[in-house]
Each structure stands twice: as C-alpha cells, then as structure tokens.
Length: 346
Image 1 (spheres, rainbow, N blue to C red):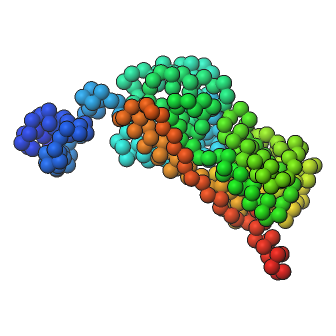
Image 2 (cartoon, rainbow, N blue to C red; image 1 turned 90 degrees about the vertical axis):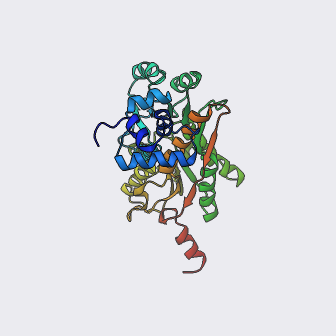
C-alpha cells in the first residue's frame, strides 16, 4: 500500500492521528493495548515513518556520533578501532539509531568539527575516544552540556561520563602472573605516556614489581606508540638489558616485539616470555599463541551506546562511570606450561 500516512494508519487502527504519532516516536504515554494495535497495523501495511517528520515530532535526530580525535591516527591499521566501531554500530542498529563516524586527521579538523557535532538538532549525543593530554576537544564537548560519553578514562573525570576497563588492575594481574611463574627481569613496552591508557598500564606494571619486592630498572621500560613497528623498535632497545619476560601494553606491540626477538635467534617463551593486552584475533594464531589480557572490545562499544542513550533520555547528571571486566587468557607465550612441567620433573 504506497504512500501511507499517519492518517491512514490511524483509520485502520481506529485511533487518532496523534496516537499513531506517539507510538511511532516511542512516547511512553500510550497504553500497551493501544500501542500493540497500532504496531500490528504498521507491520501489516509495511508503513515506514518519514525520518524528517519523526525527527520534528520527537525533537531528536536519532543519530549519534563516534568521534576519533587526530591523536587516534591508527584507525585503519590497529584492529582495536574497527572492533570498537563494530560494537557501536551493532548497538545503534538495535536502538534504530544512525551512526556518524568522525575521523579527525588534524587540529584544524577538530576546530571545524566542534560547531558541527555540537549544533542542536544534528546529533542526539556523542561517543568520543579519549585522547592525549592537552587535547581540548573532549573538554569543549563536555563543556557544551551536550550528551557525551568518553570511551576510555579521561584525564579529568570530574562530572564526566566515561566507560573503560581497569587498566591498572588488569596490568597488575598480568605482571603478577609472570612473577608467580618465576621471572625476575620483567620489562615492559608501554603505550604513549601522554594518554591515560599508557599511564595506567605502566602503573599496573610498577605496582606488581613493587608489591613483590622486585627492583624497577629504567632500562627495562621503553615507551612506544601501540603500533607493531613501535613494539619492534622498543624491543630492540630492551634486548641489551636481557629481560626474561615482557609485558606489552597492547597485542599489536607484542607482535612487533616478538618479531624482533626471533630475528635475534631467541625463542618465545624459552628465552623471553610475553604477555600482551587486548586479545585481538591474531593473538591466538598458531605461531603466536599470545598470553594476553582480554578486554571485550565489541561489547565495550555496545555498552558505550547503551550508556549514551541513557544520558540522552535521562539527562547528563549525575555523570556515569562504567568499568568493564577483563580476563587474563593464558597461552604458550608466557611459558606457564613449560615452567609447570619443569617443576613436576617432566
């Protein structure tokens, strides 16, 4: 039945046009029997509400934005961000939301994007990936009193809604695992130190060493940039310090570091053990078998949308803080099975 209108649906359902409008726009002030009757007519006729009319009626655009600042430059090379975006898109589909993706390549992009994304009527809310220290975009978005959820702990958490994992505790548990196996010279390849992820994962590493009475050696700590090549170069710096194990702040960096170790004719985990962070798909490949901290990246994106919808529908105050669970996934690269075999005399 072509070109159906709200009036046509109202006639078939035996209700007023305004009642149909309220059902289409999910107005809670409609009784369940009436809502069910109208929805049955909509389904049987294949009626599709006009997007612009729906927006005007509800004063919502039914569109949210995912903003990745210029400091997140590895969107197309780091598997983390496509998986995060996949989770966000999946949740948007479930909520009948349109997703706008904003990849910012420069400071000028960020200057131009702010008035666009914060303009009333364009977006209902924004998920923004946490960025490096001094990045002003997040502060400007939060200061605009617009529904904003930050993906990752921001530097200033006061009054800010954000979602993250406990990077300090997760890294602490990973390094403790290496200590319990028996490693003494544990190095780390940290993330960038002007981002909270890098800072927090290094803090977990230091906490584990300190609580077990192990010394902290500066030559066993190298900062990198979450890329595979960065992990490779960092490992080249670490090799002269003769570590017996490495905690890498991402699986991608761990992969590059393992490549550097193998180039030197060393074996993993016999000569140097490894633990990564993320549990990206390649971590379980046969030639890698990387012990790693699993964080639920796709679910992280889904929960980010759920939290943003809550902010949109119920107000931005009080701020929300969602901390998701992680899990240490033990595979061959940490050498746990070899150590246990030796203890048991095999």
